[in-house]
Amino acid sequence: MRSWSSPDVPSLAELGLGVGPVVRVHDTATRDLRPSDPAETARLYVCGITPYDATHMGHAATYLAFDLLQRAWRDHGLDVDYTQNVTDVDDPLLERALATGVDWMDLAAREIELFREDMTALRIIPPANYVGAVETIDLVVGLIDRLDQAGSVYRVDEDLYFDVHADAGFGAVSGLTEEQMLRIFPERGGDPDRPGKKHPLDCLLWQAERPGEPSWETRLGKGRPGWHVECAAIALEHLGTDFDVQGGGSDLVFPHHEMSASEATVATHEPFAQSYVHAGMVGFEGEKMSKSKGNLVLVSKLRAAGHDPMAIRLALLAHHYRSDWEWFGEEITAAEKRLAVWRAAVSRTVAPSGPDLVTVIRTAMTNDLDAPSALDAIDAWAADDSAADPQAGRTVRTAIDTLLGVKL
Ligand code: 5CA
Ligand code: ZN
Image (cartoon, rainbow, N blue to C red; front, side):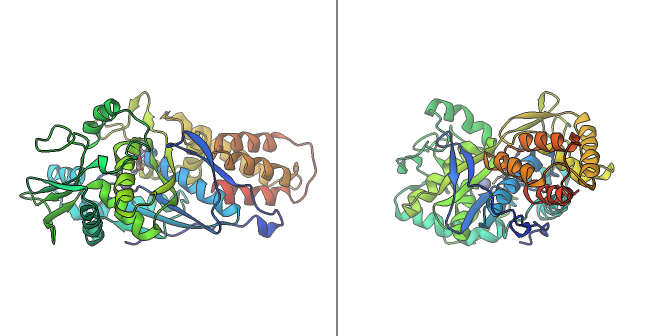
């Protein structure tokens, strides 16, 4: 499906500043920082939205994290091949459509369009391949066939399940014990207690048609794909195996990323991804952000209230992508102040050394995307009126655009 338009990402190398260091990011599977340094092209998959609601600050924070990763890779001289999915048919979407009396396809189309607008406003680099589940049914069927050939598929009533223990490495992404998995699984769409399953953690691959729900006629029968196998099929099709980074919010570590990785590995006999990178969860004043609590902080609402999208972006950048944090309303005011200070600072005719600050920003960003440290360094540079580099304003303005995506 259509992606959104890309922000311009200026090249620091073209300003004579060379390239940035190798990017290191935290890998959930090894619980360590890992260098990510492919030969030419970095391959990235990030789990996209389920389009039943508008983009909130948590979604925005997650997509911003992977935008920063792409900027750091590019600054190191790499191309990036980026795929993101849209879960445009799934239980939460169908439930919301039913509850609000809207056609599920119209609901999805409306929310996807709003998401595109929010991402464009926030200057988030778009995926080259933006792929919906609905347009991927054939790919999913193909992957389920491969899993079946590997002997890892079984039937419960008319539905198809994946035998997670067909993958000897099952559990390697999350590092959770079986007890922990069993606790989390039902909270995140799993059905451990369904009679007929071989193991409680086995996950749904194909759901046979249910009355009143959309379905597709395929050689597996009439039905629709399970969630995890969708992302596995899309990633394998567009990126191949053993791609550089599988990303999303930390709520996806288990079961989603664990299951997708196992399914892909059993089907291909190759690793799914090299690193699994997860953004922390954003809450609201001490609570989980959720529609039912009525406390969603929507990017579109902040924009409509007149807040500069670059201030929204700066407010998000003030938190390390891996930390869980809470949104409090005053953050946007602080970000607006910072934006004004920076805009004035880069407009100075002379300023402290630009290249020195660029080195500090690059070091911070390639050290697990440490945006808060980069912001601190820029604040200090903006407050310093001691030196006299006539090029500094231009250099720093470009670096902030290139590496942090903030247009001053
Ligand atoms: N469609 C699936 C992924 S295949 C899904 O999780 N959709 S979502 O709309 O619920 O979330 C979209 C992305 O935002 C996911 O990467 C998810 O991990 C992330 N996300 C969801 N809620 C939050 C939150 N409160 N804070 C940070 N990231 C979040
Ligand atoms: Zn996904």
